[in-house]
Length: 133
Image (cartoon, rainbow, N blue to C red; front, side):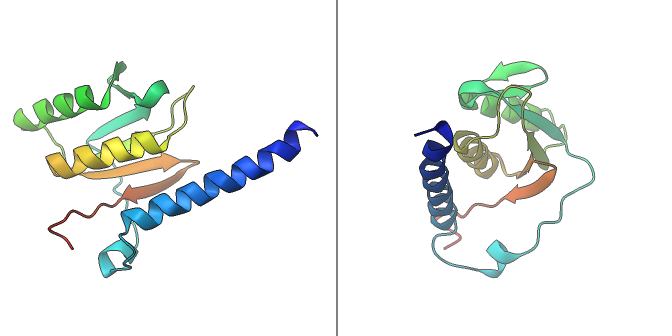
């Protein structure tokens, strides 16, 4: 068996996991908010890059999710613009579920809108909290 025949089951498994993650995030409910089209802004207040091991590059410094939250919170406390944050694919690391989940949690906690750009397509990270349900 070649490497190509082993990739197919893993690809199918990865797609199934991604589908399960998306359906879990939507809570099984298709609401107008979840189905609304993405209106991406022309510019972003903060641009992050995905780094290895679930870290983020912010202003050329690798940060853990906890450190990123502290840095963005500091930015917010200094009254610097913090309405939109874009996560891009890194040179050596692609955007993983750990990046998306961490950024979604930070976005809910700090009250900004998070977007991700992968393969030149921009998507909004939409979350629901227990008060939204």
